[in-house]
Amino acid sequence: MKSVALLPAGSVSDEAARHFFHGETVAWKYHRLISDVFLSTVNNISDYSIIPIENTIEGSVSLHMDWLVHEVDLPIQAEWVYPSIQNLIGNQAEFLNEAGQVDFSKIKKVISHPVAMAQCLQFLNEHLPQTEREHTSSTAEAVKMVTKQPGQGIAAIGTLIAASNNGLDVMARSITDHNNNFTRFFLVGSKPYEAKQSDRVKTSILVTLPEDYPGALHQVLSAFAWRRINLSRIESRPTKKKLGNYYFYIEIEMALDTVLLPSALQEIEAIGCQVRILGSYPRFTYEQLCN
Ligand SMILES: O=C(O)C(=O)Cc1ccccc1
Image (tube, rainbow, N blue to C red):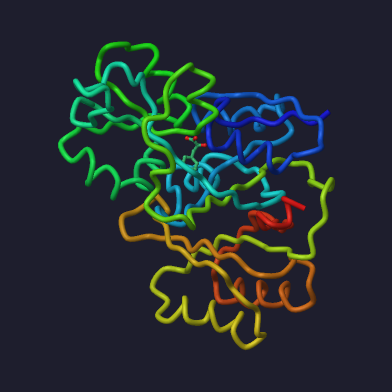
């Protein structure tokens, strides 16, 4: 049986994980912090870790991306997307007005994971403009914290499962600013994931440019361009070694062993760039996993 590390039960990661592993037998290892989710697989306690990596509204989850790149060396084994729907959760009785309706102005503080909070900014600005906001390590953690501090006027943003797991009320449903709100998840670990096949394969690499080489990024991109290799994402992040030094995270729409790709990577190395392969892995759409 596979063991899989992830953020706590009732988190968006938990929902997304059940969707991905539907039909497989899995031992779930829940962790409060994403660092412990990574370390569980690094220390061979789990076969894989599940990492939310990018969101339609918020973009890259920088903390998770930085862990993947700087702190661990765990290849990406699969990628899938999952729609995250957020809800305003609390003990409704705390916030009722005289007419027996929930009065949002009675909420003193809203807590949630920063990505979930960012997905609901329009709702928060419209309905809870003055309310204090605080970040937690996951949406599931936020919902649990509400039960630990009863009568303090705290509400959380989280999943319907977390509300029901903690015996709390859903005070507003589906409060994300856009319906088309998807999160991309990575499955990372040293064993290839072979239980499901996909005809769509991607390769993720990190490229560090040589210093003082004018036009280096242009040359990197042209190594892909003239071979008509499709890139679907390119992002720069600090190397953390020196202010102004960046690496480029690049997603390529083909498998690493596809004829043209190794020669493109050799060409990039020949310019003096460092190339690190983060993984070559199947990607699954939401629809593919639903069938
Ligand atoms: O906090 C959670 O529930 C997570 O799994 C992280 C997250 C938060 C918001 C959107 C996607 C993933």
